[in-house]
Length: 167
Image (cartoon, rainbow, N blue to C red):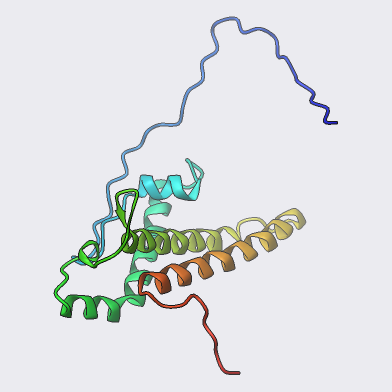
């Protein structure tokens, strides 16, 4: 059995207004000729960040994510261009909900990388004991975002997600 306690605040006098956060226009981030442009508003929704991160900080994190993902996919891009494909969207792939699976994995990689970059900066923001505990939880999340980025890059290239190294 679950107990639910509801708090009924005093009735409004009619003068109260809820002001939504401003709908800031965040310009699309232009990418290289091969990879798709990235809409910061879409990334913000995927990352569930609402307005907790400023537009400038988010833009820089996305740019880092794009640069890192593009670097990881440099040889893949060369191979696809040699095969005659001018853009990632032109590379044969399954289409899910109207989007190329390759573009989906690309955006997932950029999003994961941008989130990891933001969380890495967040880690040093609170030096209290409570902040250290929260930072430890964020550390695990950062590792998961790096892993997700790697998995998306591997899946985009048609490779296995398993990476085995010799010790």
